[in-house]
Length: 182
Image (cartoon, rainbow, N blue to C red; front, side, top):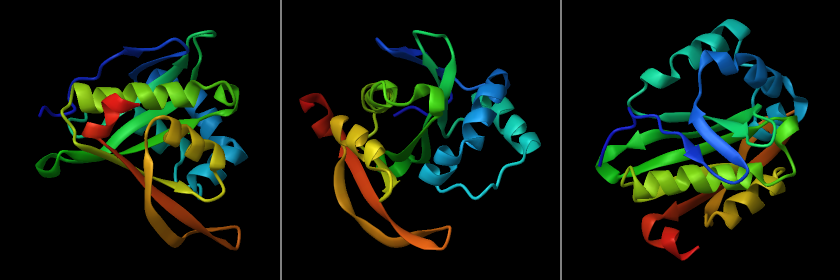
């Protein structure tokens, strides 16, 4: 098991994942301001532009997480991020999250980005378990996770309060022995 200090470039047919940097600020800030992105990620406007810029500036320095920009191979544009975080080295596990802005939706970019980073987690980092949570009002993401091999473990009831509505979050995971079979 290694730590997450090394920030790889992972290349697929549709996307390239590379270290998220401050140079991605404009694209990421625009994505984070999209109403659908804020709803699907359950973001309540916690970040200011200054905090977001500083966050992106420090991603390459983090030994306990992997923040990768999702670059659309067709346009060369950063359309989002794929992240392995909440690393637990003793249990060889971490969490996964992804954000896709409006210009990256509906073309399979998220599905490919998910497969690339999950494969890297199992094949190169030696992880055993990768988990995530997805809100009930995000069936598109859930389908992408299922295509990548994630399975449902349970439901966190009323995990999010969004515009006066309580929303469940489904907990999903994939284990290393399941990865080669998909």
